[in-house]
Length: 224
Image 1 (cartoon, rainbow, N blue to C red):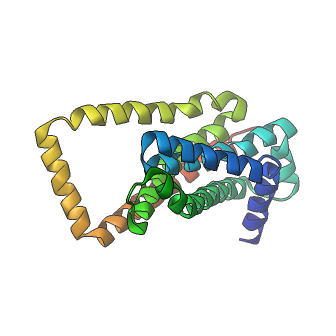
Image 2: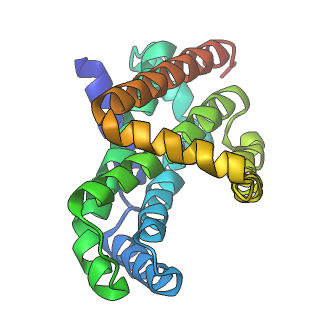
């Protein structure tokens, strides 16, 4: 665990020159502007989580440019530890962005005038957190298999699929039967919030664990 913690710190130092307070403030302002135009606090959460998601790929870019993968071997870090540390780093970034979105919530509520309680805000953050981290579950194995330069184009495809999926869902939701089914699902969720949260966390953990194992298998085959 100590070596994993040291690796996460190393990744943080790798992106620290780019993750400045100036950039953070710029994205918060952007989130406020987007929320004002969209009149939705969920848009603010999306912008903040996107900010964190951008930095997840930075260690791969810097590592490839500086050949840090060879350095990791000299530090007696196994490839599995490198993969596990990179996943912990990504999850840590997402958690930090979620906390930032939660802290910025009152400011955005004042801008949009949207009546959003702390529970609803937290639920929105949890949903957006899950979406972005699951996108990373697709991206990270690609970075470990192909390297940053080769994977950076393919890695944006999950966002395209999400957009297409959103449009498809909006079309499907016009069907009254689907709307009725969705309403029943929401009623069940409201009646069983603990079960629903537990099921979501379990599914998320299984997907992330499978992604990590796949990334480790890919990384074991890379030559440096």
